[in-house]
Length: 247
Image (cartoon, rainbow, N blue to C red; front, side, top):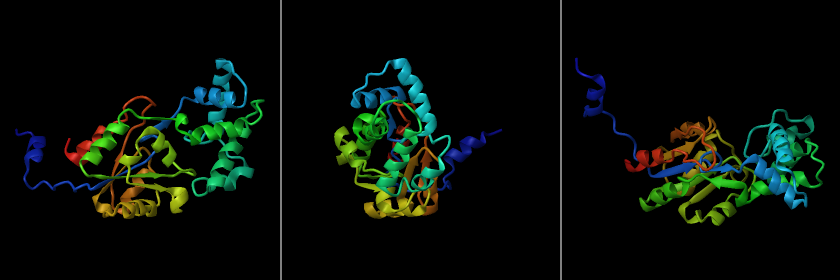
């Protein structure tokens, strides 16, 4: 009996896949990952003039992750006094800072200024680790003439990070929720990104790692959702090149 998979693969009536003229990338979990939690705590404490033992830093990091960290994971519980800024965190810079410093402050670390130091660490390039396949993927898309936008639910500017990593010239636009006034999965933020790039949403591919990123379907975009990847390991971005450049 003939293999039906073979006939499907060679069927000339097969619907051709859409032409991709632009790729929209999520930031956290797609292009970069936050630094190791213990290193995050050690560096922030050092900024406050305190040298922590690594064991204490590990315990403190576990407690802070449970409380909630910018870049994930989500908090185990949001105190009522932080509910409003938490709900607005990706729409306003002041709410983003207030939400995450407020969550960090629920952990009694005994270090003055630690909550702000932890948050400030996330604002800079040292607080993040770009995936090793991020730069090659962006460079290949640029070389092929495919436009690129970063689409992120976030309450601070990502551009300085891309500047520090030497990636700014490989990105055509940044659609950041606090600037756009819309958060994923709202189709509006994806449509805004496509408008910035000057492409039809049906010719755009959204690449992310969460159901919120898949909301781009509502804007007419194709979607690729990547599995979780640890910092320092390839993130499977080669699949983007397979879909846009044919391998």
